Image (cartoon, rainbow, N blue to C red; front, side):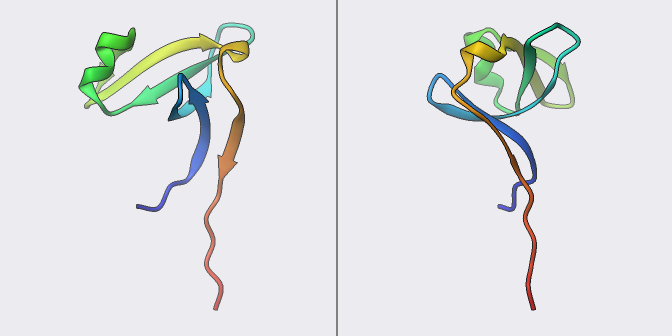
Length: 69
């Protein structure tokens, strides 16, 4: 699977994220319904989100794949 976007490590698991409207927070994104047991809420179309403080995650990074010929 090719990944692209912004990612972080939270509680030992990798998640995509977007910036949150809250100061110093990000919004984690998951497609796993079981994440609702970990505080995620249903957003739409099999997407679940959770707002966490930037200080709660291990690191923030971007993945931008490219191909060479």
